[in-house]
Image (cartoon, rainbow over all chains, first blue to last red; front, side):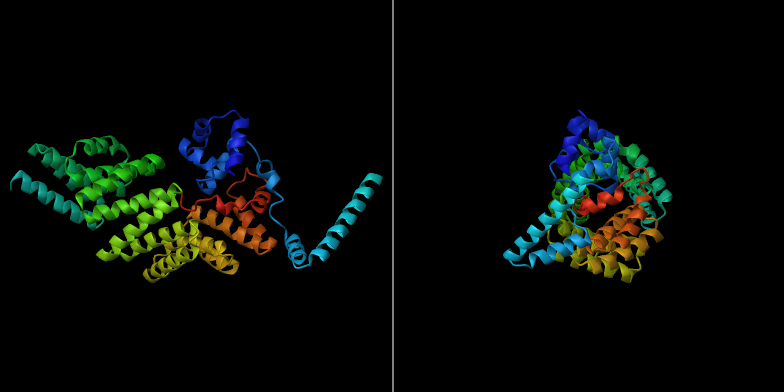
Length: 108
Length: 298
């Protein structure tokens, strides 16, 4: 998260001091936050997002795939219990299904 | 009665009034003692009386205006205990102002002075103050070391079990944040048992919140939910919004980790009510393990 805050801050041409002032924390704390050394209260996390004027979706968009749904977890657990050969068969089948889905999309 | 006797008498009466919770009376008596010290022309005594008055001002939440004078006392006093009081309460003012780095700087100075004067109550007070500030500043290892010192000193002195329980809970949370989760859980559980026995339900909300966090860290979702629900009920009873929000976040996390999306949604909806201008909170919570970046005691 620290890297993300730094990236958004730099994109908005804000210094650490300016952003720290906006969200009501010390510049040194923001610096530590950007380095992942500082944990924040829940409210401060929301203040940061408000300062950037971004939604959660924008801010954490590329992380949205990190957490698995229940079905995905079950699938992953089952997959890991298979032999390497069986895992390859599953991968081939999934690739086959994905290719069919792409073809259907192209046709429509 | 000589002026110095009057000073001692007024101070003793002020201390007694303070101990009985009669704060306005204590304030008047310490102010009178200060005036007496001024009449005596004894600067050290005047400074000590002023610091005594600050002890009451903290309780009355009126210390803010005293910070300038406290700094002067810290610089000029040759008496280590008076200087310790000045540093300690200056740190307190900055903590109230949420200026934690500055508060920490004064708290560290106070801790040095506590060692210099050798007074146990000063060492104990400073260890606890430094611990609380380091914890708020996410310096968990430093905070843990301070709480260990404070607890050891307090236990030797047979201190108030409620204060000891709070210190144990704080140490427990620090340990949970430094990967010593099992030891942290044991300390928090011990604190919870003490506070339950004492009937301090207002303080219990935070301890159950911490136990919920620790159980989550251990992957024990059922236990996390049990502690979280206890924390939530107490937080609502005592209108402790910070604990309520934190716990809703933790409970949502627990439910998601258990794959109980319906329960997670319910907690998240309640949390979202506190942040109406943030659409997409659910997606955020699902995407991000927020408990790793949140300090529950900041």
